[in-house]
Image 1 (cartoon, one colour):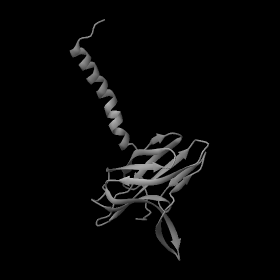
Image 2 (spheres, helix red, strand yellow):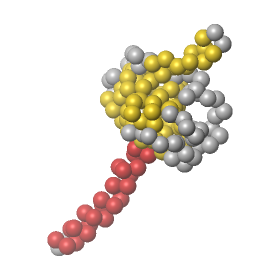
Image 3 (tube, one colour):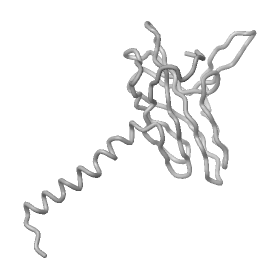
Image 4 (spheres, one colour):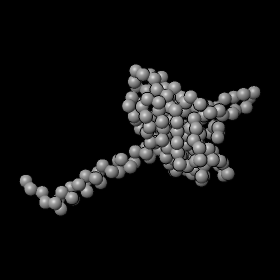
Length: 162
């Protein structure tokens, strides 16, 4: 069976339209995987007027036999992104940078959640509104980097730790 040059071009274009949207949409997904790590449920909340920071939350499941470590988060929504933990000191909550990242033990699930460990987006460039997606890159010590989308939805949590 012979396929003309024009037919080959159309076939290539058709194939690209099937594959390309999936590749582009990967960074929008709140659920991604890299190696033996599965990252699920990435979300953030809308910011209040005048807020300078936002926080991101997710679950990381390590189905491997070797521990890994979340060592970085980067996003173009803010001047700086860091991994933080929330602590209660003398009855008041405050956040601290996790200089060594967050350990993901083998065979375990680690939750970044309101009131605990989280991704901190510092000095955001614009308010985060319901329906927005914060595009970010997570960096792991062993597994490498992966893009993810933190979905913004009203009412996901009433906690505040920004």
